[in-house]
Image 1 (cartoon, rainbow, N blue to C red):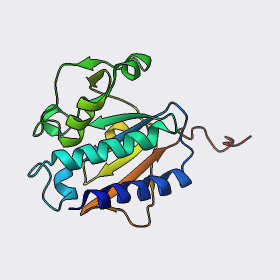
Image 2 (cartoon, one colour):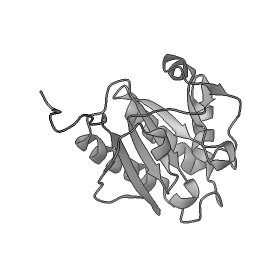
Image 3 (cartoon, rainbow, N blue to C red):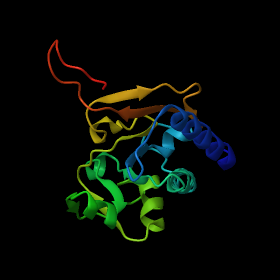
Image 4 (cartoon, rainbow, N blue to C red):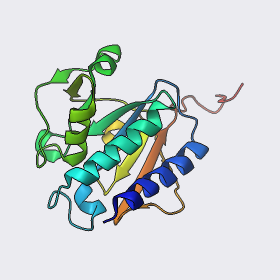
Length: 181
């Protein structure tokens, strides 16, 4: 798999996503990623460090220009814990847990983030505004209610299917309720 193609795919999808979504400045964007799926294999079977670094660095740099924080979802072997900067965890009152991601327990994208972040920590639960699921990692549990899929014209990064989510506040009330002023 060509790394430059993976990077181009990520940027194409992020450009389309952010052209359709008004994301709050300082908000939290969750990334779920199977590098195995990107290179055409089953989740967890072929974690790829170089692909993980490409995914993390490309998305992190893209979000940083928009003042959006990144959270990287880990795999099932660390109970889908999320990697964030300590300052993000503290600002959001997230509970920090003890685990260090590894290639086959956390995943290649988490390992890349752990190595690149200034002060990385793992947290158990977040409530992100939106995010990207690369390869069927099921990020919905980390996006605040109500989740809304964002349609992407060509939803592939490498060989992996991609699903993007955003959220909106719950619509509450009865027949007299109004939702716009």
